[in-house]
Length: 169
Ligand SMILES: [Cu+2]
Image 1 (cartoon, rainbow, N blue to C red):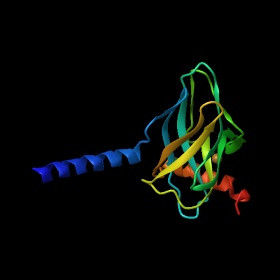
Image 2 (image 1 turned 135 degrees about the horizontal axis):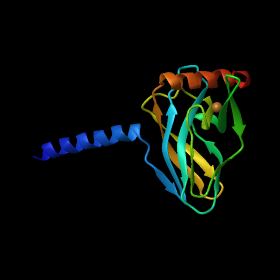
Image 3 (image 1 turned 30 degrees about the vertical axis):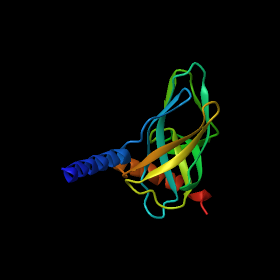
C-alpha cells in the first residue's frame, strides 16, 4: 500500500516538473504581473538568444523596465524590431515603459530581450533564470523556460545572429 502511494506521488511530481519546464509560473511583484516568459533554443556556435515575456501593470502609476541580466549571457539588453524596406532592424532601447493599467507583450518580430554573448547554447527543456530591474517594482527574478526552435523562431534567431555579427568577439 505504502509503495503504491509513493509511486503515485512520484508520478505526480514528474507531471508537475514536466509542466514546470513548459510554462513559467506568473510572478507578481508590486503592481506588476510577469507572465509567459520563454526563450528560444539556440544552435551551437550561436552567440545570441532571445527571450520574451508579457508584463502587466495593474497599478495606477506607470513603471519602467530599466535593465535585465542572466547568468547564461554576458549581457541582456532590450531590443525592438521594425521592418524597414523589407529588412528587419533591431533597435536598442534604454528602458521600457509599462503604462498604468496597461500591458506590454514581447514577441518575435517585436520587443524582445536579447541575450548577448551566451556562455553556452540554450537547450530546449532547460529553464534559465533572469533578473529584471524595474524603476518602482525593483528587482524581479523570473524563470525562463527554453522552447524549441520553430521555423518562424528560427528565422528570428537567424536575423538576430546576422544583425549582431559585427559586434561579436
Ligand atoms: Cu535583438
